[in-house]
Amino acid sequence: MSQMIRVTLPDGSAREVARGTTPADIAAAIGPGLAKAALAARVDGEVCDIMRPLESDTNLALITAKDEADALELARHDFAHIMAEAVQRLFPGTQITFGPATAEGFYYDFAPTAEHGPFRDEELPLIEAEMRRIIAADKPLRREVMARDDLIARWRADGETFKAEWAAELPEGEELSVYWSGDDWMDMCRGPHLASTGKLDPAAFKLTRVSGAYWRGDQKNAQLSRIYGTAWLNKKQLDAHLLRLEEAAKRDHRRLGQELDLFHLQSEAQGSVFWHPKGYVIYRALEDYMRRAITGAGYQEIKTPQLMDVRQWEQSGHWGKYAENMFA
Image (cartoon, rainbow, N blue to C red; front, side, top):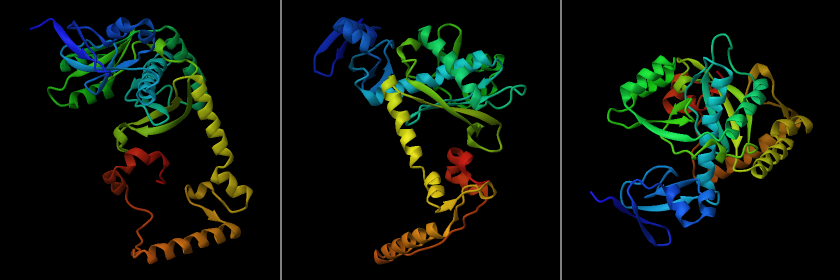
């Protein structure tokens, strides 16, 4: 087998490099500026770690902060893992489950110890501070492929029952990988990740709230604590997002409903609206307009129950995604 491979760049140029060369090596060969800016790589169309060795001829594109969608996905994914590490540092015995990136940030689900109980919003600043210490340590993020039985045994030995259960159910023959944060913390993950924790801006994230969740979105399973955060590439983006939220809050329908005496909400009927006379005039006008529009367009109107057995929502997938916001 040849020890050289051909790497084709987006401009059509090609380089002959030794097998095992990483995208980081190629970025450094192009120039120090690109070496510093490169966050990850797109290898034959798939986003990969900047330190992932290249083993065959490939098309390579280096990802920087200018590739905002990819860069944000990477950063938010890393912030989720760093939050999990921070929580386990602060609250030993807490089990980790999963933590994906979202459209505006990330979340992670935890199984707290019985002694601690569910996490609370007032603990978020403490977790943020620990996350910033991990970022400041610039810990390398290193991928390792592990044998299925070894990984399951390790999770069980560490008391990570949720991770062990998930690993045991993954398809036979599927490559199982973990990512190490330094040499003292790991999580099961397909990746990709940034090269180190220090690639993140410690001022570009904020933990926002805590809620309940169920393992695998099923109310029959263990209840977990879900911590949400918002994350961006830099503080300027974070500040702009928080300002948007602040402005939206000023126009929140619940606030306007109170101020304009249109409607109110109350705990006895969560999610249901108590319409006041002025508000109901608007409601009826909109309802009449919509009914004229759909009738004129040839649609037929039906009516379904507002309350149904939870099995309906489990089957449709709504329960797993929206259970915490549904009236039950």
